[in-house]
Amino acid sequence: MDTPLKVTQAQEENLGEFGRGYSEKLQTLARGLVSGLYMLIRSVKMYDPENSVFEKPLLQLQDIVNQIISKEGRLELVGVKDSFYLNNMLVKVDLNSIDNQRYLLGEMRAKDVGGISLNKLVTVPDLKNFIWIFSKDQSASVDEEGLAGRKLLNMKVTRFSKLKEKLNRDELANPDAQKVDRKKYAMTVYSRAVFFLTKYLESVQAGKPMNTAKALRIVQDFVDISYEQKTHFLGMTTLKKSEVDYLVYHQVNVCLMSVVFGMELGLTKAQLRDLGYTALFHDAGMATLPEELSTKKGALSSEEKALIQKAPLISIRNILMEKGFTRSTLLRVVTTFEHKADFGTAVRDGRGNIEMIIPKTNLGVYAKILAICDAYDALTSRRPYRDAYGPEVALMLMWTEMRHKFDPELLQVFMRVMAIQPVKVLSRRQQSMTLGGV
Image 1 (cartoon, rainbow, N blue to C red):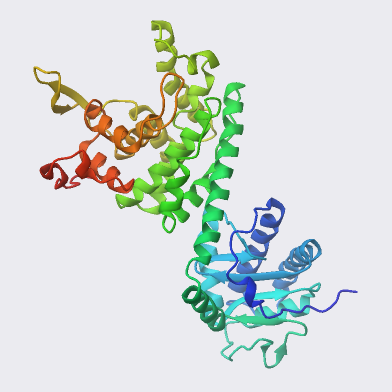
Image 2: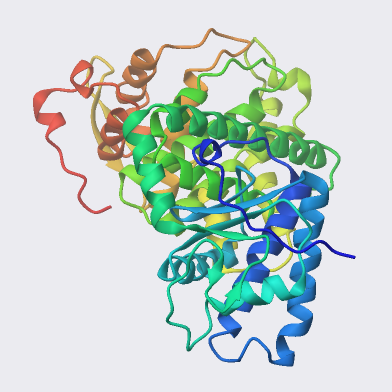
């Protein structure tokens, strides 16, 4: 016989602890929990909770909750800002479910419900009493034990007002604590990207590219975290990489920098996701090159140069091999191709210095962003034929010898994003140029 449900007050010391290690099993259960609550709370706006339409969803939710209790020994679901945390682990929902999560958070906060917690197996009657809180005709205030006429036997509701008060107090008392935890989570996301891309490039080398759709969630993480952790995130691009795994780290770094760069340019989150998704696989075709070619120290022969020039086409072929062809697919194909093209033709003076740039064609903004990030990470990375350049030297090269390859106005913005003062390499007149036309 199941023990009655007890939703307990969330333990205060746990409310600020974010960044728990990722668990795919717990993530699956957490998404089921959030989805189940969303469906029930949405339905209770139309039907009485005693209606038979709730029987199956309540049983399904009971099963999910009890699995979590059996696995973890407790269940603590808390809504913080725009996200849910289950037992201190961020719940990652699918992109298509983000609006559902926002709806659920809004409905809970409207009833002053910040979350629930329990440490015993749940029963359907207790779940039904909890759902009653959100019924269409319900206007009574909610306390920690639920509604006055429908008490939760072993359950207490975490009041949103108290939760918000507690979080605000913690931030004021220890403003650096959450930054540390978020930095750890940022590192976790970065590591997941490296792991996924390693597997993907192995599949490319085997001639059977795996589906890249799962990487969308990783890219969305990059987008979400970059809004608050730009400095921590950009710092990860300096992680040391060997010649063997250079291609993996290079593509992850370019993805990360492109997202932060695009954010500085004012791109929307949806645009940043498309940009980052493209950047994460922009050089995947290079994985098909012979290892001795990718680590060669001497000059390349004409045949070897031809192989390298084919690499972008292999990257594009891999994109086209994926199921379906959408506008996003077309954008990825075009950007992957265009980012290898020079921005313009250099006109040099008698001493060989670039005097002016004649734009070649109207390249897309994504391609121009990708070209800058791609070149910068390559220059600041150690290669078999040279040591890594420092950031200032790399940007000096990009602004002088390689200037014709990039949109000069975007390059100036990139300097600011990377916290490198343009005054080191640009004149006062050049520093005042605007970002028109982007």
